[in-house]
Length: 271
Ligand SMILES: Nc1ncnc2c1ncn2[C@@H]1O[C@H](COP(=O)(O)OP(=O)(O)O)[C@@H](O)[C@H]1O
Ligand SMILES: [Mg+2]
Image 1 (tube, rainbow, N blue to C red):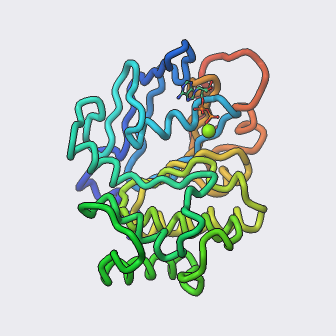
Image 2 (image 1 turned 90 degrees about the horizontal axis):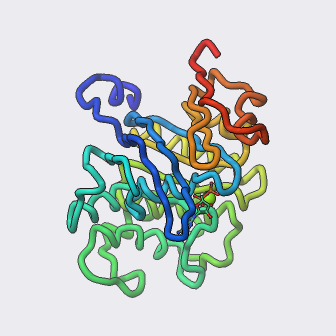
């Protein structure tokens, strides 16, 4: 069903479209250099690259926390550089974010953390679980159930394991009703079993809801088994862009190589 939604031609506008995006930070660091690619709706994309290669910067552009120094970026059909006020808030709400360190509030209950994901679509602050409408609490429980965490809804969040917290963070992101899910090193702090569970959930939920997912990862094998497509970054440049099925570990590991930068590797389904 998800595939049908993506390929039936009704809406061919990519979820994300970057053209020659360059980002120079104050102080002279160039974090992205002429980055250009489209992410079709419903695609699961893994970003690979060593620390400092620009993965987080790229994700922060897509959720409108940074603006390109030059080049253009369209998210869900909107030119981010021109988006203001409610348009920008809408774009941010439609872009859920999952972080390496979960960014949950430890002293709150699991359920309240999940409810807080709805804040972007509510007016005014909320204090305490019962300041959220019953319908939102039920929706939050539903999302917790989906990630296998409904049993722990009333537990203090700080008592959970890392893998459990990341599942709660996914449920919280779903409360935004996102079209795009961004995940910045979502499993870098987790043991291998928890990492597998979290990556599997991200993939299944993406397919169920026709979400576009862009996740930065350190582990090449995990990326190849998880994503539809892999983009490699080195020093802010795209050095690899290929269907995951066309890549083997050695080729994908090339983005971590120490040889001088050369032209982007042109890989397609024929390898
Ligand atoms: N807000 C910032 N101000 C200045 N430099 C930054 C900022 N954010 C990232 N950088 C720099 O940009 C480069 C890319 O960083 P980052 O996107 O965090 O890489 P990655 O996520 O791949 O580790 C690094 O050199 C980093 O130090
Ligand atoms: Mg990073």
